[in-house]
Image 1 (cartoon, helix red, strand yellow):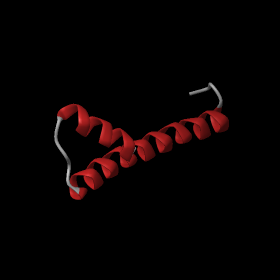
Image 2 (cartoon, rainbow, N blue to C red; image 1 turned 180 degrees about the vertical axis):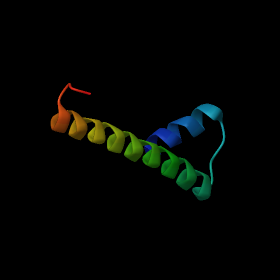
Image 3 (spheres, one colour; image 1 turned 60 degrees about the horizontal axis):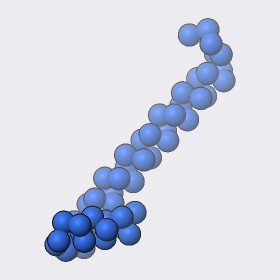
Image 4 (spheres, one colour; image 1 turned 30 degrees about the vertical axis):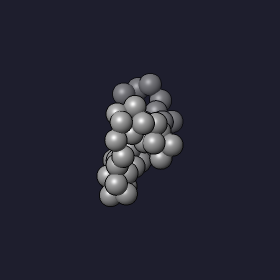
Length: 53
């Protein structure tokens, strides 16, 4: 992720401070965790109830 942020900074032509990098990283990681949780929950529900929803 941080390598991606470095790439974005290079394209935009400026440097982010450590606080900005950490904020962006936290946002991306939180979003990814929520997506994993959502999809895992859906799989558990389908396994439990099948297609009878």
